[in-house]
Length: 243
Image (cartoon, rainbow, N blue to C red):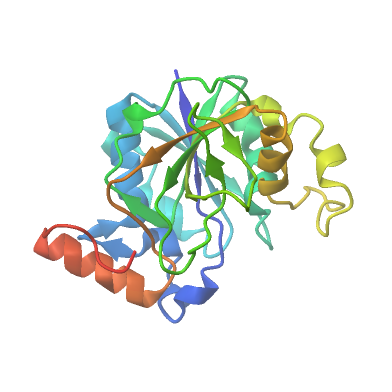
């Protein structure tokens, strides 16, 4: 049975003052926490166990979400303190709860109408990433998706933006230290590092695939974008503004 990891440990500094007392994934959009939209999708996909990594205001997550039974899920909380371990460190820290099979990863601070069932159950290589059109705040994008569905770290080619959704093999973290090197935070226990260098490392070997989603997606990174999402969901009217 597939498991999932929801990244929810960020400090939400750009969302202040909203995140002074509420972690960003628990902010409401359309009458429910941002993270609840993901949990509903994961449950519909047939996922039964979800790991949520937490740090800032971590105690609020079990209070708000409980054990996940309302979604027919079993929630596990992987606490990181006092500083979040970033995406790579957070994934490594959660591996004992995720097991040996490929798992789905989703950022807790995005909103999308993407159907998770459109992702492959297993990536062809080390990971399969969802990409979206570049939003105004990230016009250059992240990675180039070629005609064969393979991703490249090529800034000279047209790039799309990583949506914060993907399927990963645990083996992407094998030998992580050799890839990360002496990046600040990697010497800590548990280590803190980004997954981006690992993505780029395996892209150079042709082992990261991807797909382009053209539907609704927003990175809820500022109070203004959260309000735009809220307005769109309340109105239930067409494309979301100011992605």
